[in-house]
Amino acid sequence: MGLSPVSQYLLMFISVLSLSRETKAQTAPAVFYPFGSVAGDTVNISVEDENSTRIDLWRPFVFFGRTYNKTYVNSNGHLTFNQPSLEFYVKGFPINGSEDIIAPLWTDVDVSVNGIISYQQYSNGNVLTQATRDINQHFPYLSFTATWVLVATWDRVAYYYHSGTETSFQVVLISGGDLSFIFMNYGDCAVTYNAVQAGYDTVNSTAYFVIPGSINGSVIPNLVNSSNINVAGRWAFRVDTALDNVIGVQMRVTSFSDLTESGNIETVLEKLQQELVKSGLPSSLKLNFRRIKKTRP
Image (cartoon, rainbow, N blue to C red):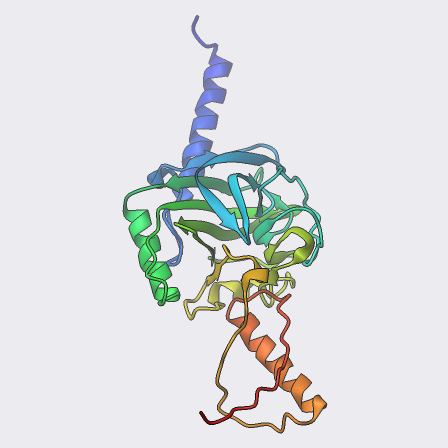
């Protein structure tokens, strides 16, 4: 049975709309991994502004000691693992909740206005080569080889109730052996008056991180220039190890403070914590000072 003229027109309109959205998606910021139709992504073009898509992972992904075989790409700028989330109201980290969350940019997104959300998994090819190179550049002491990558991209998406806004960001999950990493990549981000937040949180918030400046909708355009690894627009984190497996941290400082006074100790620890958080450790990091008497053998 042939299509009626009206049905043919509607089909043509949908095809043109899909083509125009995917064509716009091909121009990517330098830090972005391949995405969109040219990368073979599954592209979500939805008339609704709130939806979640389950992805069955080709390889297990370890996130702070918990192993997952699926994840949900939620339209409002975050990933969850145990269940989908339609939550557009941003909950500030730490939530102290029962769900692990990876949020490259959690806010009220409306893809019915403009933009696309797409995703793709890789277990071989150039993307794994790129991930291996990037991890060894950002974490040079691991001799890492990527065996699996998931790329999820929000390309030029609009904010709810703010037509004409376009914001682009991406999250990349990378694993190899027992090691897991995430990249949060940023293109141009429009100002928003909606609640917004970028970072991650864990079950009971035993580990969490908020990218500095990401909770202020008027300054998030700065994300394209921010980084914890000296690569503008990219934040990188190692996320496989539960914090209770971390025994200690050793470092050398170039300045001396009189640590015999408790006030100075707290000041130094606070400054060290700030620097470690800037380098990608979770904001929940707690430092303790212990005196060690050095003796000659």
